[in-house]
Length: 55
Image (cartoon, rainbow, N blue to C red):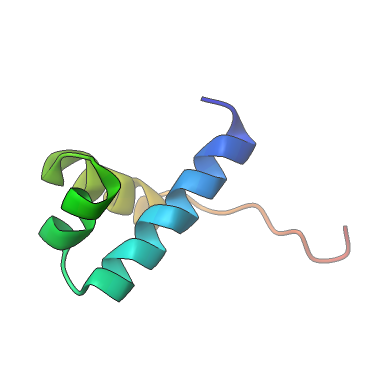
């Protein structure tokens, strides 16, 4: 997947988990498996983000 699409999906997954209140509810709402949502969050937490400061 392209980096911009990955970033958009990460934001969507994170936001949905917060608003839905649980991983399983977010997965249902997104049409994703619980494992896929969990993996996205794990990858977001373990991947250093590139700074856009000064760009």
